[in-house]
Length: 148
Image (cartoon, rainbow, N blue to C red):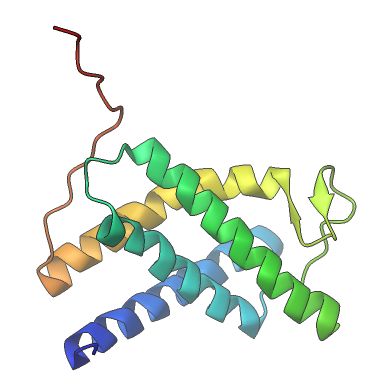
């Protein structure tokens, strides 16, 4: 059973992610849609959860790659619902190369890779400062043990 403090933490992280995601969209294309607040909140919780399921020994670049995959998967699922099923036409990547059903494309997967870095850092900072979780520290490359 999840404690009330955990629910509050998840709610706050969801709100932060939702606002940041919408702010990125507004900065990029001048507007956003309310469904993007939900997507942003969920993405932020998911990428922040990487350190809950793995430890800080995971190289940051690997966290970014996993985050990019998670965000792309969530974007695809939400695009299928919001754009294809409900017909809201919030976005359409069909004119971009290497797209799937116009909902995701390689270009935005790469963009999510780079944007995940500030997301990871912000999540770790909020969890550390506001919720007393482990102070963030990062591994950039995993060193292989030398054979003896």
